[in-house]
Length: 507
Image (cartoon, rainbow, N blue to C red; front, side, top):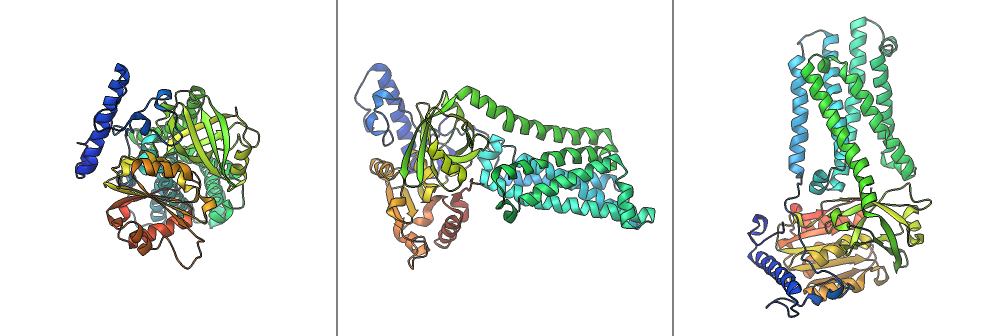
């Protein structure tokens, strides 16, 4: 199902609706003419040879198709996810409250706090795992960058709740038994379920500490991922501990409900992080066709496979790529598409920022590739306005280049600003200029050192380039500091924050 002029999101923008309806009409006419052997374009439509991207094959060698956005695809909106998480925490609180026995005794008070913090910690672990389960509806609706931030924030809350649970349980046991804390700790570890929970707590703490920015900067990606897998061990041991706790084991219904929650999350993780990637690898048989230099430190990797349309990768999204070559096969790297999927061919454009990205330059044609995804929510479905500004910095041009080619827009409604230190750092320049000329879109290069006295991303500078800036949806992709500075400038220039769409996926 493609977006039509009557789509409710576009009803407020007659010009865009008319443009989309016109494009749909032209597409149907082109398909009819192809079937009937006609060569002339439909009245008011461009010739088919003018509809393709820069560098694409002539229409005789490819099938021209309109850009389509599947509006039937299920996407979980961020506000819905937030309400669901908060509502689930409230339900856990009600479960605890329904079984709590009011008492003014010190050991009972400590025990009640330990039960509540333990239940919330167990629920929080499930939420963290669900956020990183790579469920398409969640990924495409919320975005990988936002999910990663929620996961990080949730991890800190979970570790705080686990710490509170341990301290309160220990104090409650000491108050009940009349012993000191060390003796109480030794006594508690004599119970098998509590000993398992202690190991689970240790696993969660190790995973959490390894994710602290200072610690993660000192270890390789492989080491960090291996340590982060301890989260699964901690979740499993915590689940075993909770099943024998009084708050869950007190009723067959709560045991069943708690077990079903864990089973559901476990199935989602196994399916989307295990089964789906393997199935995609077997189905698409991706391999490297060409590696070409775009600049001294940027290369494009062209890959070909089978049935790549089934990936349903939308412009602006990224995939995780695993190149089956020595010293690269064990690492999954997130890179966005730098060209639309066409004729079972995909392309990514990579800057040599780390050890693994530098090795990509040495990939050989024929190298097998395992691709997982797509991921990300910086796509056309976020658009709410007729006019669109694309703002890219450095190699962040890759998703912007695809959106620049494919976002439906009338001439004059689409603008691309490309920030780089100098002209030599501009990649895919010829393609961008060809797209701009063909679509009647504006293209500006913002060149200069970041410490220069004149800031090309200052609010007034942006307003000078785009006079009606506040009326635009803005798609933004670039290095973290540049993206933060640009976001602040856009807000000062009058763009509402909800109309600034950005995503950081290089985590």
